[in-house]
Image (cartoon, rainbow, N blue to C red):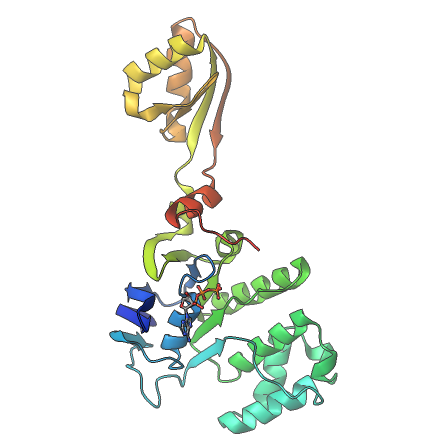
Length: 299
Ligand SMILES: Nc1ncnc2c1ncn2[C@@H]1O[C@H](COP(=O)(O)OP(=O)(O)OP(=O)(O)O)[C@@H](O)[C@H]1O
């Protein structure tokens, strides 16, 4: 199974409002795919359609090669909109109830508690859990069925930095064990840290899809040289005007790092002094803002 998630023209309209607009995404086996977009972009609606919680207006989807149907979610685990647990039961008892309901052997309960690092607190009542622990228990519940595909809606939302780091670590570990993960987030830093590939959604549409490595590949070579105008003229002649940008004393060159030595030699050879020559990583936040029209609720 090479494409655990596949959508074609997936669309959801609420009256005249279009929440998701002709979405084509594909998630490959074994990858962590980040579905990134500002608040209201259509992420949750998409995940709800995938999980059969909302009926698409038009378009098609397949999960693990299956069209929506009674068995299509058998190997899919999901964490969406805060799972419901009994507050006065312990974490372990809550999971046992869910395991019985799902027809999963109880032996899985201790295994998933271990995976989310809740073994030590398994006897504590759910009501006493912190938000981070509740979220981890939600993930444990999603793992009961030994899913091949995990669908997680904003899995770190509302967590403190330590809770976020825990959750990210667990997701990475699950992926390393072979589980395919599709998660949504409005935090670029999050998808950067755990995802292999990112689909950026805005106003219900996919505006970009790239690997994290590709997103990072738009850096520039920064040159501080004197006299700067002479350097600019020289570099434009060498590289072409379109590749030489920057204002004031700093020039920014759209070239790869391999060209730094040649550029330095060219300038120095022309009697221009070079006081700085360095690679500047692309500003992914700016890329994201540009793709999503600057409407980004970074809370
Ligand atoms: N049941 C509904 N009825 C009407 N409009 C809805 C409904 N559910 C979602 N929408 C609208 O669809 C759009 C997309 O919402 P959605 O919750 O999918 O976005 P999101 O990207 O998950 O945002 P967030 O990060 O805030 O959760 C929003 O404009 C929202 O108001």
